[in-house]
Image (cartoon, rainbow, N blue to C red; front, top):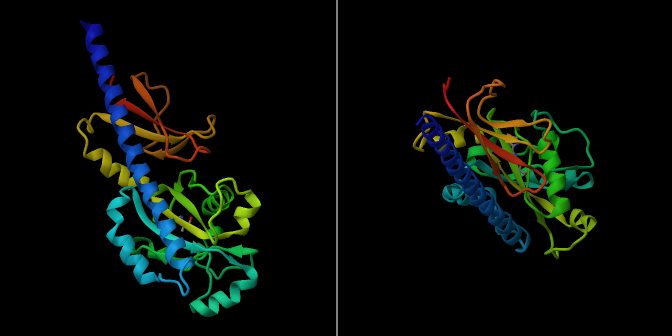
Length: 268
Ligand code: WA2
């Protein structure tokens, strides 16, 4: 009888963990797909129309009205690639100066990625060079070299919440799937991205599920298996002998590995 009870408890843990992992992965995937569509929207209306048929007001309205399609994103934005030789012309045309993510005027760089369009929920990144932040910069470089969606490691976003940033590259021309890295970099127009506010939006998601009270859920970036990074949940003291279950997660960036760890709360 004791064994049967224990087994039932562990089965419950496994099924609750799998349900949460599936739900998180699905909501992540739909959010990524919609950001992909936004990257195509910018390519179509900003770059393939002359003059561009997109402006900040239109972008803000469209992204506000479609935010239900991106349940885990706190906001999306478009950062334009500006090479140093074009900086002065860009700043004169925009009527503002490129700033760093610390809100200082940007020092001279080879190139910049100032935000020109933003959803109102992240309007605080407008005009900021997203290459001035280490995590954002790595994402920008990796996305444009691969042509694919990429994710940062978990870090404190400018909202001060723990999360990750998603980036899609936007190119001036339609590139073949087998285009070389140099061709991709040369054809790069900018970067469409969004911030996954994991800390608050995953909390909301899990709160709605049955069994939330008894379960402790953590999500880790385990890209470097010897240095797991907390992406969601609080750091758990090691060596707790209560049963736990691990579910693999696929957030669509093959460079990164994630998993979910579930345990029962307050088990002796
Ligand atoms: N968006 C919102 N909050 C952030 C952030 C970010 N990056 N980085 C740190 N806090 C416009 O990859 C291009 C968005 C970056 C995209």
